[in-house]
Image 1 (cartoon, rainbow, N blue to C red):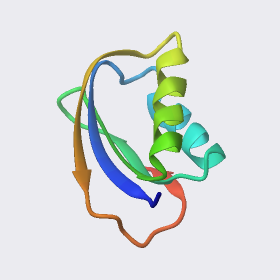
Image 2: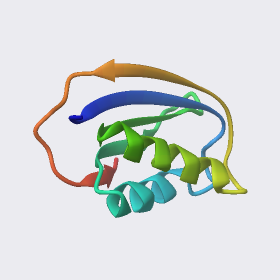
Image 3: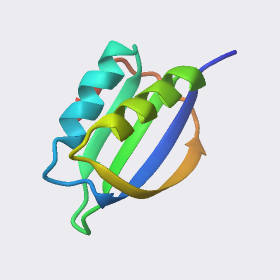
Length: 89
């Protein structure tokens, strides 16, 4: 099973609660690559690449944070890129 890349837009109480740095820490610990950033409309956009099971573990970790409250997520599969590391933008 190969790598996949997903673009996710998170809605809810996701800014000002450590979402981006939690995502960065979890993604790096799981060997995922990509980036995460706040948008002006209050959402958080995350692009993540790696094995699907590890991306699922990232999502579990974000949902365990008591300060983050995700109402819904728009997810799109996008082409895999050549990159390393996971960064906050």
